[in-house]
Length: 76
Image 1 (tube, helix red, strand yellow):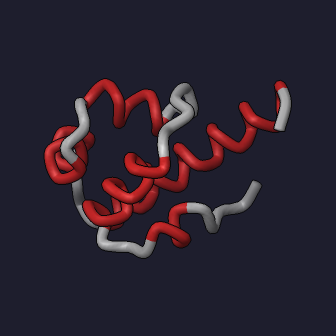
Image 2 (tube, helix red, strand yellow):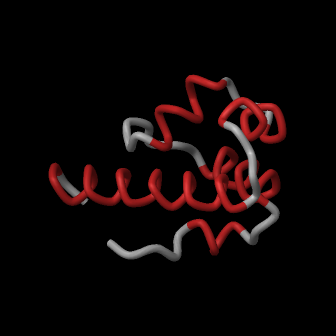
């Protein structure tokens, strides 16, 4: 992915993470604690400003109580 495609993907991913977080009734701070991330890292992910690692994806999935693949299922 290049340029606009990657930016669009990251923003869509971040929006999806935020929706899942809200469904679980978690704040960004709660999610950060559960996933062992910083609050600023969660913010950057949700804003689409952070290209995360597979380990971070796995930590988010565990904290959100979803399968890792579910995090990648969103409208692009």
